[in-house]
Length: 616
Image 1 (cartoon, rainbow, N blue to C red):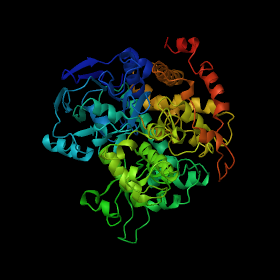
Image 2: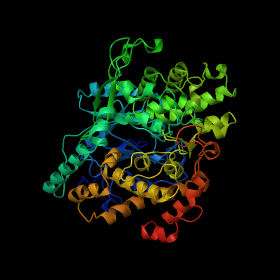
Image 3: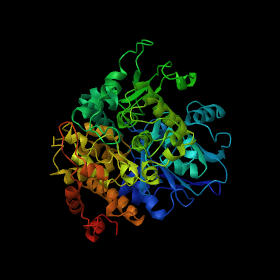
C-alpha cells in the first residue's frame, strides 16, 4: 500500500512501546485513518466500556494520503469512546502533526491502560519511549509544546497535547496540536487526561515512500490541485475569508442559531463576520485578521491568524495574548457569539484563544454557555451560583466563563459537564441543544432540513462534518436542493455520510469536497495504494465504516431514541427569515433514512446489510 504499514502500541500501565505490522486485510477493507482505526478499536474494546476508565483505548491515526503531496494531506484522527456522548468518537485535526507521524514511520498509535503518573510519548523515527511529564501537568497546551521543544533542543518537533481541561475531565476537552489546530469534539482530550497522558511529541525524518505509481500520483494530484484552485469556494472564498465567509450567508437564509436556538437570525452577525475581522479598529488602526494560514500540504489555506485589541478587556491585559495566534473560524464565532447573543469580536477572539490554550472544544463550550444564559434569564440560575451576571449578550460573562471552565474553577466545573448534563442537573433537560449529548454546530435544522437529519443520525453526536448538506441546500454543491423541503433529504444525507467517511479515511480535509467528489479522490488513492480502488469499492468502504460505527453505538446501549432532535426544534417554529413558521421534519425523514440504509424500523442494520458489508 501507499503507507508504511506499522502500528505503535503503547501500554501506559506497563510503560512499554512496541511495534507491530499493520493489518493489511483490514486496510484493504477500511482504507485508513477513521475507518481503519475504528476497526481496530471495535475489535479491541467492549462497547460498554466506561470512556474514562483504563479499559478504554485511544488511537491516533493517519490515512494513506497523509504526508503525501495530495492537497490537504496533513490530517490525522483520534478514535476512542467519547465521554461526552458515550458513543464512538473520531475527532479529526489538521496542522502538521499527522504528516510528522508518517515521516517517523508510523501509521497509527494505540494507547492502552493508564499510566501511574503523568507521562508524554516521545517518538523519533523508530524510537518511541514514555517520558515523565510531572513538570508539564497543569500547563497549557501552549506551554507544553514550548517546554517539550526546548527540552529536546528541536523546534521542528510536532506536539499534540491536552491542557488543563483534559487533565480536569472537562467532558468536551480536545487535543491540540501546532498551538491552534485541534482534534476538537466528543471529549477525546478528557480520555487522554484520564490516562495521565499529557502529550505526544513526534520527530520524523524518514520521509514517505511506498507510493504505488509515483509518476501517476504526481500527475493526478497536480490535476486535482488545479480543480481546487479554480473553484470559487476553495480557490477564492476560503483563502480570502476562511470559513467565516458563512456568517452573513447563513444569517441571511435564516439558519443561524441564536440565543440557544430560540431565534434563527442574529442582529449582530455583521459585527462578528469575516468582513468585520478585516476592518481596521479605531483604537489601534489594526484589523483583527492578520493573515491566512495553511495546514501541511494544503493549497486552500483557510486558517485564520488574528491579533487582539489589547486594550479591549482588562482581563486580557497580558502580553501573553497580544501576539498573533489562531483566529476565529465560523463554528467558533457562531458558538461563542450568535449562540450567546454576543456581538463583541474581541471577546470572541479572546474566548477562542483560551479554548485553544486550555484545550476545549469551542463549539460545545459556547453552546453550553448558551444554555447557562437561558437558565439565567429564566431565573433557574442566579448570579451567586454562576459567579457573574449572565444574560444573553454579555461579553463579560463569556470571558469570565471561559476562564472558569478552562481552569475547572467554581461554576466552570458545571459548564465543563456539557449542556446535556448541566441542563439535567438544574431541571431543564429540554434546553440542551444536542444529540447524543453533543452540542449542535452552527446550522438551524428548521431552516436547513437536511442538517436536522444529519445531526440526529450522526454516529458521534450532533456534527456538521459527517454530512455537510449545507453544500447542496445553501451553496448548490454539487446540485441545489430546497433547504426547506424534507423530500430527498434521507438519500442526500446518506450519500454525504458515506462519502465523508472515505474523505476522512483517506487522510484528507473535508473542505476539499466543496470542489472534489469521490471521483476526484479515487484516482489519487488508486495511484498511491496497491489493490483495487474502484469507485464501487470506495462507496462500499464509506458505507462499511458508517455501519461499523453504528454497530458499536448499538452495543454501547444507544437506541432509536438517540437519533432525535430536542423538542424546541420540532415544536417551536422559526420566528423570522425565509423559514419562518417551519419546524424540523425529522420524524418524517428518519424512517426513510433507515430504509435506505438497510436498517429496521428501530435503526438496527439488518442481516443482509451486515452480510453485504462483511460486518456479520
